[in-house]
Image 1 (cartoon, rainbow, N blue to C red):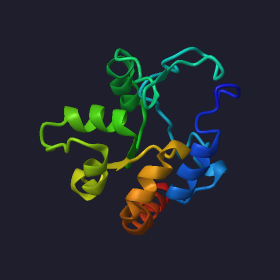
Image 2: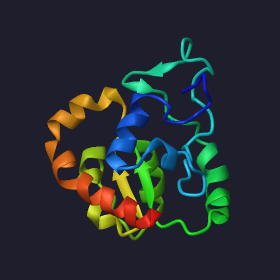
Image 3: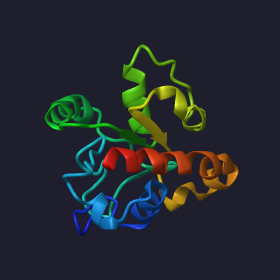
Length: 158
């Protein structure tokens, strides 16, 4: 992904596209899908071989990126029907800003309560292979959520 400059151009992207029920062509069609990272650069170094890591994965996104850019970009995106909050940092930023939402404390609690965030937001765990343990401990995610997510994504793309 870091070598090609294409987001989700790895096993995480394969899994995410499978979860959403979309092809690679649809996923990378900017007229249908917008991909907006929480930070606009990798929070370590720019090469995958020398990237800095945190204790349990990548370092958090840089704190100044989302507040500086997200609202500006969302204002320019027309007809956004669905926002997928992929991973803890996206959920914390978007759900934590909305005072009407009583945000759960953990990613698992947040994803379990996915239906309570209205029609616009769907919280998802990060599709990284590092989350295979989370997926195996939470079989309800694939059993209960994925079919609904695929329907909502298909409806938004129609």
